[in-house]
Image 1 (cartoon, rainbow, N blue to C red):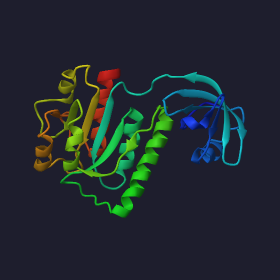
Image 2: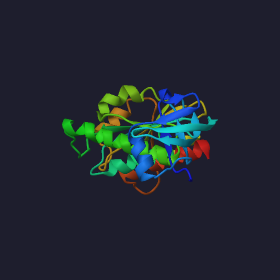
Image 3: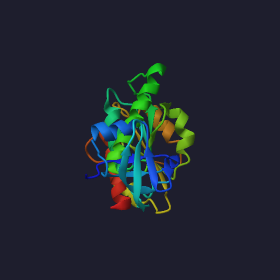
Length: 249
């Protein structure tokens, strides 16, 4: 069978030449993907080591695998890029998480800015975070990544300033920026930069107050993404794709 997914395991699931699959992946492999004994699949451990394996036994709540080949092929980006996403309306965050995970994002932080319209009750926030992390896990499997990016809890913009100050550069796509394009900003980034944050505004964009908060940081660079104004669910994906092109393609 052609491999279409990568499954993630904890190191404790490896026992010499065998690996055991447990949890929700068991039903997914048996009932959705319909793998059979002797079918091959790929798994990845907590150290980003990949294993080509063969299914040798199905148990009620466990699948036993035999290790055929071990590889440390690196499919992750050479730099860590984190996305701080202004919280959008409806289910747009689902696509944001999915597509940025496919492209190689390191982590995703939902952010409340002044113009965020969505109000998440505390009782619902945990469910939403769990849902987004599940989407990230599925997207990572499908795209063959070695690790699953984590979607963190929702935070206010003012509360992430200290975290943003730790990045080598913080890229802020801003529709009012006319002088500096993302292309120009990336050309000025030296190879020594190993951590990048992207901060995206919500549907209504950044307010003057939001920009004032961000401009307090010396590592913030406001950029234009071109003549057209992108939707919030598109802007982060486009920015990450351009960074990927600049660094790796």
